[in-house]
Length: 463
Image (cartoon, rainbow, N blue to C red; front, side, top):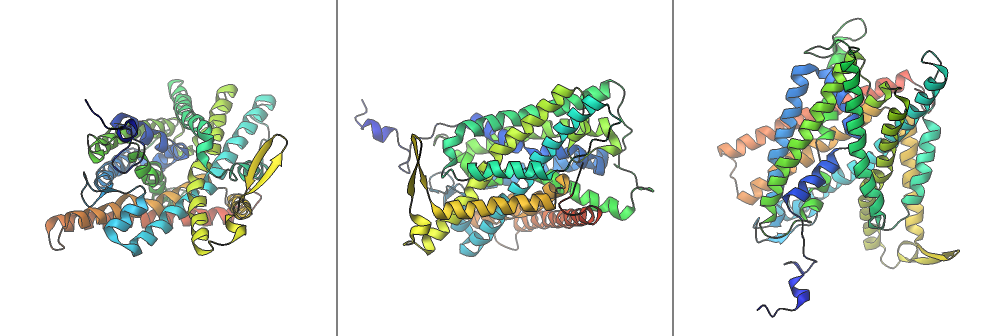
């Protein structure tokens, strides 16, 4: 009979509460994370690449992610992947294996991307709100009516809502909202696929091509190349969950080893992700051909109720996802400020404020800086409300360093792979090729944003 105290039996090897997750729950987390706003831009990406390159690139990106995320799984513990000390965050793992300089570089990329995604989510929510208003307009006035609306009021409204949500010190207090957001992400992905399928079945699908949108009077060869680069960025954004991979691993029970469970979860999750991505992108391209929009939902106005429901799902998801991505960024800034000014009451003191029967703690630094951040993110979104290009830029920036470079370098350090060896050369070749792909996608996205900014006046974009 085991005489150990009950509390000791309920703790893991690091003294924390015993984890209970497994490969199945981890794969569920993966699918929940990757089914996001990027799914809505995949049909547009397929239209730029065509059937052959589009499918091939999606499969290639998925294969690369499956390989490199397996390397990341082996680095959860240091130095031994089974018995070593846990790394609770991606940055901790990078610091353990690659040192302080790489730790800082990783932090800049990781938290810079998290901050940028809040801009993308503001654009996404406004796009869906405008789509609902257009659907109402066409439903009431007919499809020939003038139904173009400004994004700005919707972005301002979304920003005001996030001002309040961002003041919550710990997003775990809104777990219910995060859960609803995850459920709605599946809702709009399946609704958009179903709507596209209905267009195809009805015989109204547009002409498609194995090479995507053809070069012609409306599209120069140069613009075709830029769009292909931007499309790769969209696919890169949709297929990454590097920002939360260690959060997922930290839910896994200790036996069997976490890295083995996570490798299985990667295979299950990425396979499910790839199937869903191919379904959404192929159905969208088959339905609209060269006229496939950046956000597939904006192409539908009927059936009115289903289009509205799908866009409502997008908006609910964006409300929760904004905080899921924003809170880690808020936390790292506030931790840094606390370390630099540990004795400052402005930064560290919690002031109880009573509102009716409720007492809440207000931190002046948190109130000030989070408010400024949300306002700046909203202004940037209003200045550049270009859905597919912004998502492409965010995907391109994060793909190479987070999905390829750091996993490969940590694996080399962990296994002591020497420079002249064949394995070292092959790993570096893969990293170099992915760097060129990411760089091309970044340049293509910036070019697309620049063209849009010249085409439309800042802060007056309508659709």
